[in-house]
Image (cartoon, rainbow, N blue to C red; front, top):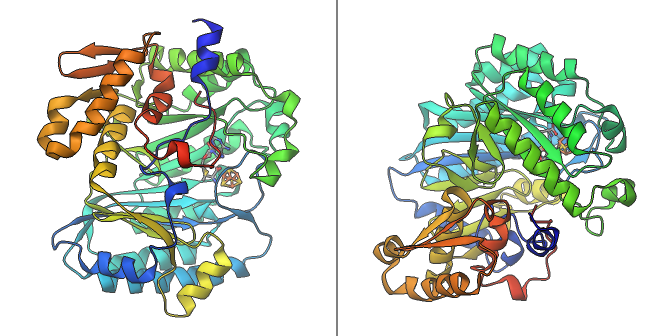
Amino acid sequence: MLPDLIRRYSAPVPRYTSYPTAPQFSPTIGPRVYETWLRALPAGSNLSLYLHFPFCHQLCWYCGCNTKAIRRYEPVEAYVAALLREIAHVSELAGPHHRVTHVHWGGGSPNILAPEDIARVGAALQKAFNLAPDAEYAVEIDPRTLSDEQVAAFAAIGVNRVSLGVQDFDEQVQQAINRIQSFEDTKRAVDMFRAHGVRSINLDFVYGLPHQTRKSVQKTILKALALDPDRIAIFGYAHLPSRLKHQRLIEDKALPGIMERFGQSRRLHRILLAAGYKAVGLDHYAKPSDKLADEEVRRNFQGYTTDASDALIGLGASAIGHLPQGYVQNATAAGIYQAMVEGGRLPTVKGIKLSADDRVRAAVIERLMCGFDLSKSALRDEFGADAEAVIADAELLIEADQDGLVKPTEDGFEVTDFGKPFVRTICAAFDAYLGQSKAQHALAV
Ligand SMILES: C[S@@+](CC[C@H](N)C(=O)[O-])C[C@H]1O[C@@H](n2cnc3c(N)ncnc32)[C@H](O)[C@@H]1O
Ligand code: SF4
């Protein structure tokens, strides 16, 4: 592939875990609006819950998540108390006539919680919401600080899917990112969850980190395959040191360039396909036996999922909710979040109400990110006349594409194999807000 093309299409763009993207959220959407949206949830809705835990034992220097390193347990206790209060408040407003089909605890590191607190939060969810017996219950885990008691507590509350952070097994890379984690740490965590009956295990890796080479990431992924994970997520390192101070501790000159990054991502892709994994969307891989490989895939803030619920309720600091009317986001700082909850308020600080145009563009972007195609007739069927402006953008894109990113079909276009790694750049062509946004984004590959 030609280097100048790779450079051209690797420009920084959003990750499109939502549309409109979070930088478009505004403070005009606050607790009062969210309350009316919660009360208006149609009876019988399928709900998805996301709980955020913004704490870790130590800060990894590459980290782009909303988290903080803590040494004492008191901040976690205070946070759990606020979370329990928010769970009760939100469930009361949403009413009892819904079914929760997906639960996801993310962070930070949810295994910052002591086993008693894991049980307490799990019981609060059971009490407040109507959890479906076959609900998918997922938790993000830092394998370095995981105890058997925590694993038992997660299994006891119904966790059936875990995602373990690894990033890289190479020692030089681990030192440069301030994350020392032996292969044995990871294997121990995998074995513990399997021993407790958790069947779906995902491992997270990152390419584009300091000192990584194609050869080193290949070594890492081959080691990972020995653990037989059900899913693997491979993220490109998002380096935004002007926004995230701790990333300044990563030496710029140790970072691979755009061409090397691209080479790493393609090498990992080829190895995983050869090992029998199915590529799902941009950066996920699933064993054929995993439901991510054969069910319809959706895009949400956790990446790729089979979650098809009608609304997502976000709980905890910085958590984002997605209701039929639009998006809402809680206060990012744990202190502000806690103060709002303790004052008896919903901790919503911003959001966006979706316009008719937003809905069409959101559907196009999600479809491109998950299925790599666009169908004009499907858009017209779903959105009627509102689809026309977006279809006109699709026609412009097909006409302007000199490099074979997309291939016209009778009813629209599909993204080519050449275009797939740059699908976020293709989505950006449908983003009506991009010109107005001063937000920083990560490289597309
Ligand atoms: C909440 S963490 C996973 C659980 C746990 N905190 C851990 O790290 O083991 C979410 C994942 O996001 C990815 N990630 C974090 N910062 C990133 C960045 N700057 N660029 C790309 N991926 C990143 C990592 O793969 C990480 O495992
Ligand atoms: S990558 Fe995970 S463990 Fe590391 S600081 Fe971020 S959230 Fe915490």
